[in-house]
Image 1 (cartoon, helix red, strand yellow):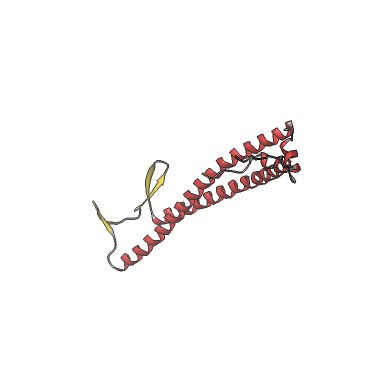
Image 2 (cartoon, one colour; image 1 turned 45 degrees about the vertical axis):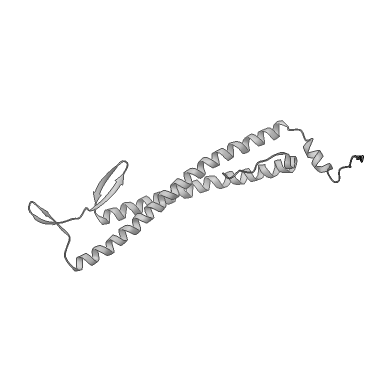
Length: 165
């Protein structure tokens, strides 16, 4: 049998990491960690709201495009036969053939009214998106500052990076 001799190896440049591992967490450090966690949670919530608003905005833009395409189709129809409805008093032009969703219900509106309502909704959503982005930006900046300060003090002993699921 052969014998193995183990000798301790002195750490090389591990002094910096060892010092960071020995750092004591002060009350100010704990406040910074807590502030980062609160900002992170709030930023996550606002990001979800922002994603939802952007989806709604994309839907409004798609509806606007579809309405424009419907206008093009109607222009072609007008060159041929007019699309008319038979009513009790004779033929009536269908001026309210667009069903616009308001809350849980739909109302019939003219194309012009639908265009006006879609434009107003798009402006409203654009403003909400800008407002949310303006609220998120300073939060990210503060989180970045806190993160840099804590990583400078604790190094690899603290993990403030987000896990992407």
